[in-house]
Image 1: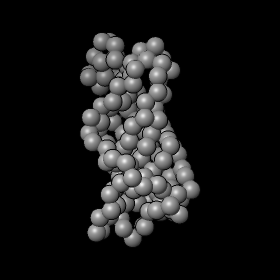
Image 2 (image 1 turned 30 degrees about the horizontal axis):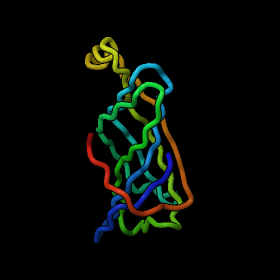
Image 3 (image 1 turned 90 degrees about the horizontal axis):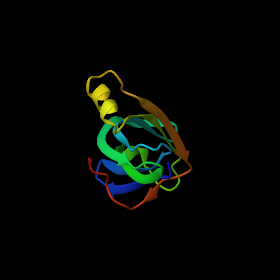
Image 4 (image 1 turned 90 degrees about the vertical axis):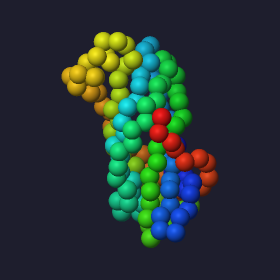
Length: 130
């Protein structure tokens, strides 16, 4: 995880982008399917959700992506707002057999993730579903 950036300021909430660097050390492409995560600002949970965005990470490579969250304005995310994110992502290898097991619900691998930072940044784009 690299940063959490406020990308849009609204009248009641701010949209943030959680910038994530994904790594695939295997020799097979991996497809990220679903993210489940919570965001805390100053030790208060301000967002919990699920993001379905299919992203394929090529073999033996890294990829920078972003997942969205909405933070209520009263939580005042900004440069002096310590944050943390934790959750899990569901993924599958892109081999034909792995896809079959995944589609049948027999193999739904997932991995946990967690990160934190001293303050939020600003700018960038709002993540869109893939």
